[in-house]
Every structure is written in structure tokens, then in C-alpha cells.
Length: 139
Length: 224
Image (cartoon, rainbow over all chains, first blue to last red; front, side, top):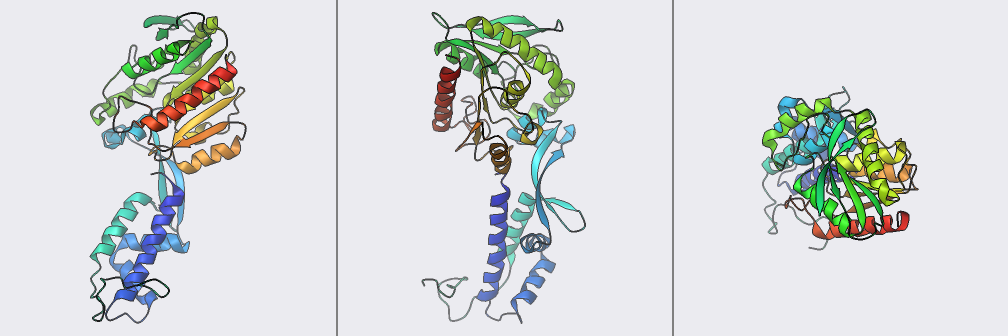
């Protein structure tokens, strides 16, 4: 779905999930910022999402030109729209501080996959899975 | 119900078209603008449906200047590059000339409305802003909103979009609505092409029915 609002929601959820992973660790790092910095170093997609949510990067909607050689890779809706819009498609992209651009959907897919790769041991006293309830939640 | 005809544009170009004639006295005329697949089976069926509702309907072959007689039932990616190459020759200026010819042909039935899907939705907005001879417009999921948002329609207009459209960002529809409070802009549950029943993976019958009823009522109100 091409929605800046929903892409930001997904980014915030990824960001929040990283915090919950910190909470769920049996032997937490010194602090959550150290933990997040470690995740960002290990997984560039997570670093990009953290930058986006923190406001260090920007999410923009823009027209992106598609070379004819890449037309076969387009979804049919992008193909149709591109034909009468100067061979461009609309894309949601993350603009990083240095001006580099990345497709937000690709970044989010990589970030979610990275979260699944994070290796941690659940608390030894917990029995409800890797993400115990937070304060104020029903158990 | 319909027949294939030729239209002559003001610059002398002769293009293909499909003409569907209602039984009895027409309520008015409708110009139906195709998606990007030419006068496909589905577009001709939609033209026939408008005729059943009482409107003389003209569907011009909008890509004839790029590739004369272009029509395709192939929605697959295997020929995207080929069609993309053809469309390098497409010009919005001459497209408007062809739409004018269709409006003239439809006007024998009275007031004329314009409607269309995808490419045709975009053309509906532009024609409503630039051309004479129209009394209403009802467009469906016209892509490239930033390329037409600054145009102000001269006739009553409504537009229909899908909330899961992969080609049109929802925020752009929101911007269009804010920029043109005079336009009736609706968002339905559906992807791009939610009215094309020849594409079962995208077709959403409930949303399309709701939108189509709105278009019909809109044209009843403004055309007759």
C-alpha cells in the first residue's frame, strides 16, 4: 500500500519492537540505547528505521523514473500509471541525512527480517514466550 | 449493441472508436476513456452497459496515434516493456484533440459526460478542466495526481479511488480532496483497477457496484 501514514506506523512498530527485545533479554545490555546501537550496527535496515522514527531521516513520496528495461518487474498498477506519467511511478522513499534514498517498503521488509534474526535468550523465570507483558498490560 | 466506428479529429487524424447506442431516446451522451489496454473487451462491455442505461456512448481508441489499432487482453508483465516503448509517442495534447472528437460524436444525444478508468480517470479530470462540450465527469483511479491536482475542472466532477491502490498514494488522494473541495472524491476498499471484472485478482464487485451507481446517479443529475 502506498501510504506515508501507514509506512510510518510500520516503522514505529519496528522501532518499538526493538525496545521490547531489549526488555526480553535474559542479560540486558547496559542500557537500551547501547542495545539499539548494537542492532543498528548489525542491521543497516534497522539503523535506517531508527533514523526515520527519530526524525534524522525523512519519508517522502516522489515520482521515480523507470527504465524500460525494468518494466517487466513492475506491478500491473505501476505499469499502467507509469505509461501516462512520463514513465514514472510513485514511490515512498526514505531520504537520509546525506541525501541517499531507499524504498521504504524494502527497508521495512529487511528490518522486520532482521528483528527475527536477533539472538537472545528469554528470561529464565518467564514462561509466556519471548516478549513478557509490559507494565500496565494484562498478563 | 455497440459497433466499431471511425472518428475524425480536428487535425484530420482518423481514429478508431466504439459506439454503443441505447434503445429509444438517449438521456445524453457519455465519452468513455479506456485504461491503457485500448478498446479491450472490458471497455466495450462498459460502453454497452452505459448504453443500456440510456446513454449514447463513445469510447475513442486513445493510443491510435502511438500504435494504430492497439488493443490488448494481455495484462501480464511479459509485454510491459513493449507497450512502454509504444507509449513514448503518446502526447497529452493530441489526446485532448481525440477526446474532443469523441465529445462531438456523443453530443448528438444531448449533454455529455466523460468517464474512464486509470488512464481514463486522469483524462476525465484533464478534459473536464480544459475542454468544452462537457457537463459532468466521473473518473476512476486516475494515476499521477500531482500531475493534475493544479487543474481546476470547469464542470461538476467526482473521482473514485481504491484504498489499497499500489499506484496512487492515499495521501495524494487526500491532497486532491483538500485542494478541490468542490469535487466529490470517494475512496473504496480496493486496489488499482477494482472495477475491471476481466482482472479477477483486482476486481472488487462490491466497491465497483457502489462507485458505478454513484456515477450513474451523477450523470442522471447532470446530463439527464
